[in-house]
Image (cartoon, rainbow, N blue to C red; front, side, top):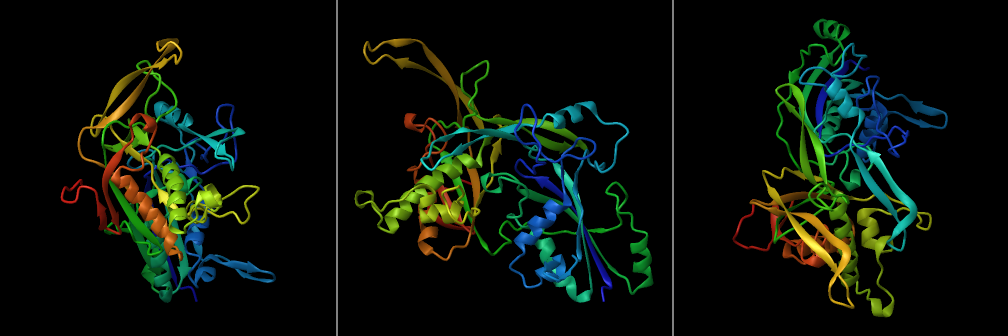
Length: 452
């Protein structure tokens, strides 16, 4: 008999841009995010429930909690998952039609930033008509959602596993989760258990107001953030320091230079209100691409598959690349999702790095002089102090050589043997540093010097 109700309300923040698609497009963007009746971003409960179920599928109690349907048999779900609505300030949540909306805030979220992508063929080049873009929700945007489990006193262990999964750093929502999107950080948890066999709890549950804008008498759960709560994943941490200049280009220029680093605005909840700050971005997809290419080389080396005998494989044809980063396409059987998670990295120029403009000119190879109209400039970055820290989460692999090829690749980055970003043929993008595995140092380029 289901005598208990377990309820938890989560306030989560987008650690990276978020894209939960609505299936719609506009004249300017190929894919739009889900939005509520007020025009602000939201996450449907079905999306959250699907991600939760998939992440807990290895548990034997999954069908009891989430329900199932098999031919003429089945049960309904015992877990109720609400939609996640955006926090407009420190208290108000966009869950009903609002009588008045801040015009500036509405304009910002009506014109969300977009990310450009290009579809790559099996030859490693851009596919014809393969350029597309999608809008993303600002990093730092906060949402509120609620979980409720109907069960008995013995279901508390299942409930704790569900809450723990939401807090896991590998819990991600939406599309592009392997390319840096959809990482959620839990800001607060308010939790309460109702024992309906007790009159006081029964009356409290019946009178419970489910509105996110109502006062909540739940107790706030104090917990320590564990960055590696999911034992199915290995956490690698790259502490990197650039040797000189580096650039992760936006592909466009400004009034100062013809090419500049990628910049995006992020959301900051300050003094109970939403503020915006422009920061420079190092996209996870840029780092992932370099790692993927070097993994293929290291795996071929470990398995003694060499090009001169026709055994070397690259791209998704390489077993390690397919296992770690996934594969898809008409010509590739059994498509699968990747098992490597890397977050986009944001930093403020005035706090971590500065920009410098480098001028270039194309040289006429015949005359040795400058070509007419070939002067151009690029804005690159250099570090003022400290270092960059990237977390890479990798699902455990049964093949030790696959994991070894990834570790060797991350060590290559720390040694300065694998440049990152653009203009690498001009000497930019060289990094050195140290590598940690589940918090333990496994390689340090500087040996005694500590970076963090």
